[in-house]
Image (cartoon, rainbow, N blue to C red):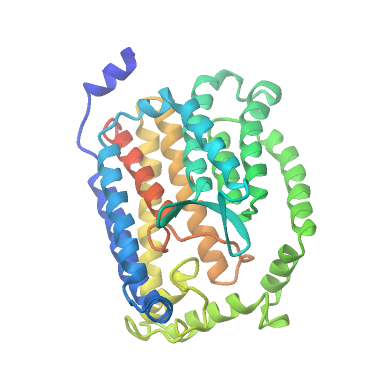
Length: 372
């Protein structure tokens, strides 16, 4: 309690640069969601603004959350970490209950709430960061111990991963595990321990791929999408057909050809392909530059945090965003197998967008006490 009081008396202004970067990405995302979805929305809902209006609603909710959370001392999340993660585990379990969970694109990952739906796995990513930051900050002296440090910190992570894989949602599960591994690594865990677990993880990952035929097809399509151009390789091929013609300057905003029912639902996971087609290499590079600046500010804030908990929660949220960006753009450009991962702040999606903006709010609060 004394530490919480100390925090509340040393507030400064939040990182203005991070606010500008986030709002810039969000603004570009709103424009691109409309551009990418207008044709599909007109055909399916007779309203070209259908997806754009919903995205604007969630963007407004997310920005409000960001500014509210920016003013909540980040130690509050530490205090309620156990409650938050228990609630998220309950929601994850509810998704698997017949009649409660909603199935989309082969994954039972959503719970319907009126006219909208929430994706509990997105909330679990944030909950796991909050809880793991608490555990790592309280067990620094044991983190180099395989039995007392590494195993307890990974047990809960892989329990959540296992439940997410029952949906199944390999993309979200990969981001969750990657984020937590990053946090544990920067906390000082031994590299030798990671090496041993890495081999086990690789074997398990291969087992997951071999256990489901569609995952094997995704790997095959990643290596040679033209082997099955109308099936498993269709999305990658259409994505490359969008990026290629974009050239240096692009075809012009709103002038994409691939959004005319070639690239399925282009406003979601493959929005970067449409952006590259319309805004070209320069537009795509601008997005990568903005994400790089966001990563830099996040790491800088984490390094300057006044305590270990602030450092871990800031680096965890920053790592989550960075990993999700790398996977999404890797998929869109054909460098990685297809997974259902949104591009932070740009892709259409309520749960993901709101939680990402809320996460930035936490980093901004840490920045109010940062020494840099």
